[in-house]
Length: 562
Image (tube, rainbow, N blue to C red; front, side, top):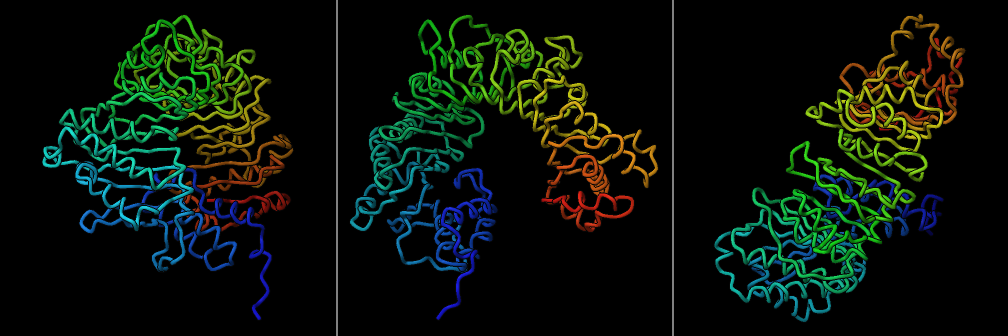
């Protein structure tokens, strides 16, 4: 008779799956994981195979969620591989394909598609019934094509590419998403581009509703000839691939698209996306997420204003990367009550638009979940001198009144931004703040918390007390600051500290102890792995000592995570 199972072994299956998901800590698709990340998954998941049937089932579902379908051309055979499978365990003999959620297929366009070998093998009896019934995503990686391979292609190759695609789709009866990544593909011959276009067009026909295309090309962008289709809900257009066909494809699917990621390098692409050859902007009536990257234009370029239309009326997430050439409020028209997340370069042009069209007035937008500000360039002298658009302090104050999260990336104006935050209006609702490359003292922290009473978490480099605190004798600091400020904030709970200069970790610990004395619910310090190791080595967790003994309970409550 076996030993009784522990409560840990008999947890409900839903709880077990959530624990496994948490342990993995994955926020990306398996397709995007590196070899190192796959190894880390193995380290985490392998021991769970030995716990109990429930844990083994949950671990297997995670290990087998992604597989590689390799076509062995020389053997004329298919081989199914699982990147996260533990090396010390042989593959089980029971069927695993029903656990696969995403399939990665590597192919050489001419060798595997145009000679028909892939289709011939797929039609063999042993593979005809091979199926991945739960797989909703196909990731197709196209490897480098040589000139010799290209010269062997004929006009009829397009039909063979279509046949290859249909053979691939026969393995995945419910596929809904297609990811195509070009790995250094030659685009010297025009028919190559037509074939690639035929390949992608065939992949997203019918039941597929999401298509992502990326490229590892250097030099001239690959221009794809795409066949128009409707019903797509998601399009992602990657770098080094011509924008024009994807802008046209997006416009054709304006009624159904929910997510669009596109890279634009000229104003014509933007107009194609909006107008598609018509006289008025088309409304993307289902689009909730728009990511636009503007590249290869002068930093001070301003595109013509568009006076009419509300092309994005239900947008909830807007990300503008690179330059900001828009000189109107087109991106914000009609979505004031739906826009929840905004990421934007904080340049003079952008700030002018935000100010002129009252984008950040409380009456103009709903309560935003987050606003992310990308650093401006040093070339934006008007902004740095405060002569263009709304003054930075006023703009920052508006952000604090409508956003619950502010994420500032860069170091050109972070000090100026932080100074504006410390004079925030009483109507500020900000709960989470991250400012990169900012050196913050405990004095600065106290002023900030006074201005932002709703703040829950703060991310920055904090490793100094400030002149006024340093004047207080070390043994008297906790009691004097406690008497002056306690309770500083009952909402503040989490301090996150990225990498800082060597030798300053003990200062982080001292700052955290002061904050714990002042904020009754402060309970967590998140450190990078490097800081965590150095912290445990230098500070040795000796958190409670004179003169902090009277506040031992507050200090022992602190959790340091790395």
